[in-house]
Length: 82
View 1 (cartoon, one colour):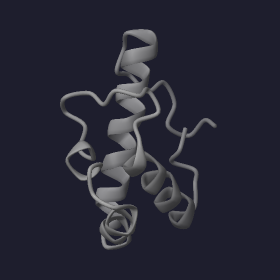
View 2 (tube, one colour):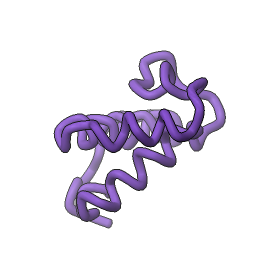
View 3 (cartoon, one colour):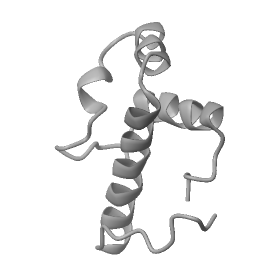
């Protein structure tokens, strides 16, 4: 889903996820929840200094969590599909 995004757009997605969980209540294993109480400039600084691998891990986690919470399965059917 999000894997076809450019690196810049992935960073934008993670910055948005850093601000708030789109499902309003983060899962207990959310890798970003521990940062959400920080001021926005600090959150963005953290994301700007994440490695590409960490950005991809956050996106992977978000996609699995979203799928699990919406459809009851953590499986991503086709990472190449948009």
